[in-house]
Image 1 (tube, rainbow, N blue to C red):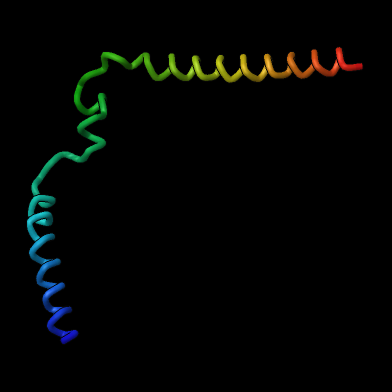
Image 2: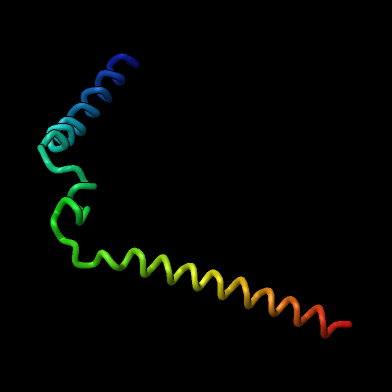
Length: 79
């Protein structure tokens, strides 16, 4: 009984995944190549990376310094 069940499960597994394997073997460019502007020739928004980096650095610095100012104000007024 177990051998019939295992054979049936193996056949079902093969029947389900064989079309997926055939679909996966179609030739397509790699996903990194499809979305990389260097390979597709679209350099329109190259400036967004450095701009976002500067934005996050400035936001981090603002949160850090405002937190330090707030902590200094609380420690000075509590005494």
